[in-house]
Amino acid sequence: SALDEARAIGARAIFLGDLVDAGPDSVGVLRLVLPLVAAGHAVLLRGNHDDKLLRRLTRPAPKETRTLMELKAAPDADTLIPLALTVISATPFWLTIGRVTLVHGAYHPDMLTCSSGGVGEVPTQLKALALYGETDGTLDADGFPIRTYRWVDRIPDGHQAIVGHDIRCRDAPLMVQGAQGGRALFLDTGAGKGGRLSTTQLRTPNCGPDQS
Picture (cartoon, rainbow, N blue to C red):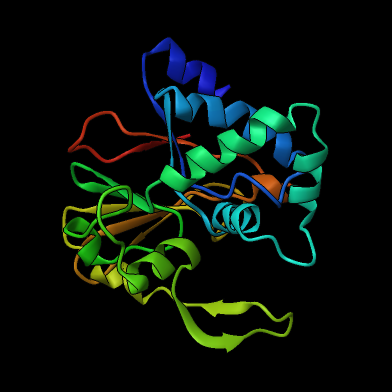
């Protein structure tokens, strides 16, 4: 697996968020990933579904989500729920390594200078972009926000943004170059919705990723 390969070469896995809700075993994913993050062997960036789980755990709603019900019913719920609260509460909204910014939803140039969580308050606009991506304020026929990609044109030359959240291609990660010369790698190929799981490897802080 990708995690085994990372361990073999002494690399640290970075998850682009949305550990829960879409796939068949959200609790199993939490059980696998959260201890790695808590031990410092992996990094989790916050996705909108992770953020939703955190809100439901801290501010219960009348109707529980499927993931929350399964989490509460898990045999290790007494340890897994506190671990989820601790880890997700501390997850950053984005991470910049050299000339690469990793974020769940969408990139903004201010992410290069603003706090991404943990220390300092994250600006509301950047938090929304990080979690939900960029939209035009309208909904499609199924009631989902219509996403836009003007943010790709704001990536500076020589910089790259790696994002999840949005399935642009199911066959392989999609690379798009923006107006300023920067590039966006859409890594989500629909693993939680019947597609393949895609990864990329950052070999050095200033080097673009290799896809797999």
